[in-house]
Length: 385
Image (cartoon, rainbow, N blue to C red; front, side):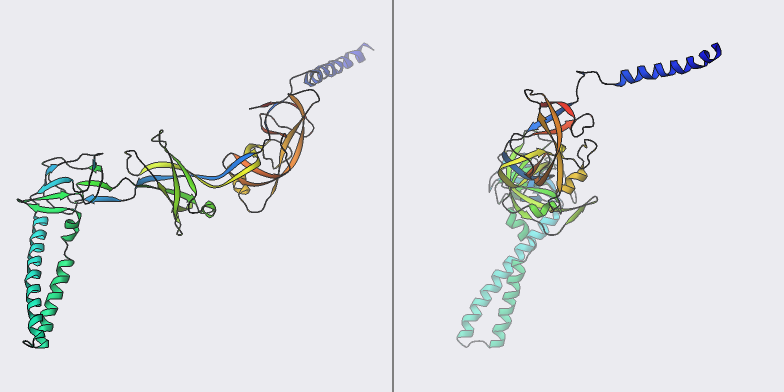
């Protein structure tokens, strides 16, 4: 008999231990409930936008020099300086290339003047019958060839920009107002091939170039508003207008993108080609219901944080149905409620919110964050952020 009692005792001990474990595991009355963060639904305006990046540069940029020899005799402007039309920018000396080109230009100009006089004189003689038509046509052809040679001479490139020759040196005067973006030489330095003397702007007009995913680009239209910021210049906050949308995609890494041009008005001295972020607002809707993207559910069993995959799915044209958890407050309580699952229909989205066109009303309390899994019918503590 005692032997049987000894055999039963270990079993009783095991059952007792299991019973205590179960008691500990069972939640006690009044224990702390799961806390979820919620948003109370109100109707508001909603921006549909595309957030992307690119760069900001001056619309008209010119390089001076870089294709001829010589020496910088004197510079009149430094990097960052503004200049006006007609201002003397630089003096260049000891340039065989420019001097030979200029000398040839002057020779061509004098030749044209001589042949033009001959042509005008022969024209009068021809009209009076003093020379044959053949002789007159020969003189006329010589004149037209000399004129073409003069008009198409390479030195016009420099002359139109403001190059003039005086006392053995070339003076460079600006044909427009602008700003020196970069000066590559100091007084007395010799010029190097492929290295321009300076990079300058024409005026202060800048343009933004944004790289937009080829799918998102279909939403953008000319005249859309763009808000521009820059990580490298935290104080830079300007607005622009979309003024061009390329039709030919280019590849950046694995992505196909479309370049979108943005017209901006700048009154500051900014570097050329600075990196920017652009928020392209393609639509603004008034008085709509929206929920945080984090509120959306695809599965019933757990709270799922949003990823890039869901954002891509939201962008599909078909209005797929999604779900959110809604809290119904307990009677007389403002911090405790019961969870229910609510089907919704969504439409436009941005990086943070989704427009809800069916399934929610003003005043509904929607869950957008929970550290633990949440379930239909569960009682939770909720708070607003």
